[in-house]
Image (cartoon, rainbow, N blue to C red; front, side, top):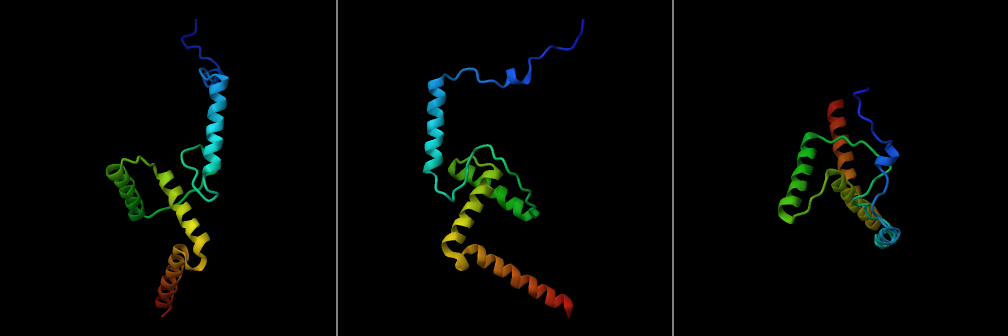
Length: 126
């Protein structure tokens, strides 16, 4: 006799168990209404995402993001994970860029970075 436990197949473990057909249809309708009510350039909020990117942050940037996340929780009762915080920040930045173009915050910051980089390179070349 084997001492290994016998486990059911994976499909059995992850099957739907208690939703009726009507409830599932209502949930699908609610999700569809929520999806349609969101603006075209919004964030996806809390859902499973298909695509992943890696972003490297400095220690100071990571600390600032954690402080913002904790401030949202302590001051406003909003529990937000880092991914959601990043998606919201990207959505706001892109919406501002779409609306203001060359006068957007994104363009201003990128220009400032370019000027700073050029100044640093010129100083190193002398």
